[in-house]
Image 1 (spheres, rainbow, N blue to C red):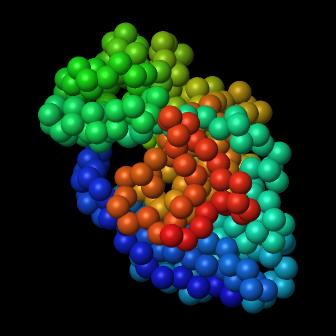
Image 2: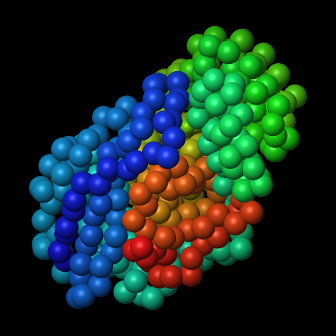
Image 3: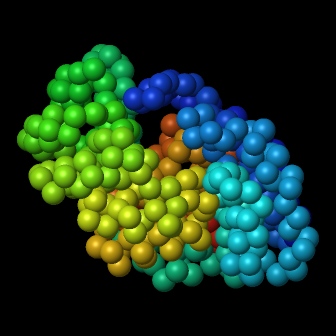
Length: 338
Ligand code: MG
């Protein structure tokens, strides 16, 4: 198996602002694994606040020796080896995992949703994320995508969240989800704001409080009229169990959890613990987004719009039609180079 990789900086169509700051590019690394003339594609995307960079991903991938494995289907062994090379490096690990899934799916001639036994027709709608901004900018962003989505996701945690939601509501009646990105501090105020949000047609709230405040998240979940989802509070499989009884659901992202294999395990564990599942993404090309979309028939909510936010997508894969995720029937993760 031959591993190749090269840096690829993603250009954002709009400057993207969330509670942690704003940016106009996202560093990425594209990965290829070739085996007997077949190439699988993978990707690492590294929003700066997560601590990985092009340098760290390249340095991680340089340490890998996939030639020690002769069979790409021994994924459990290969991915355990990759995971053990160094702690952290979740996006770097995900890039290998995705390329390996693409490769093995292509060798089998099947897309992963079929291998997993999932019905493509059950894929959910995806939310489309409206970043923070002035009321005028927010309205403009909403109007720009009018008619293309059935649910919008609004980033909160600003100085005046109610004004932000009001400006969205001034131009659309679509159902909303909100993501606070740990931006609220006071749990009672959070509860009051959530009650108000419920009246505004908001369906769920993502990461309202700082990630380690599990007692306060549990307090809030017990009283909240809306389901509370953890995002920053959950990274990998081992984190899922401690969220039982703490939140209503978890946001699983390939770049946090090291890829499709662990994401599949997380979905199943979450289900067994009575937790709802949301599938999310970073700013990514259609490569990583289409990989995540393979799991989407298992999700209650999908936020797989990362490829729609960039202007230099080198792949074509999962599509969004009338707001709904449409999985490609192509094998592997269902992408082709454009
Ligand atoms: Mg989030």
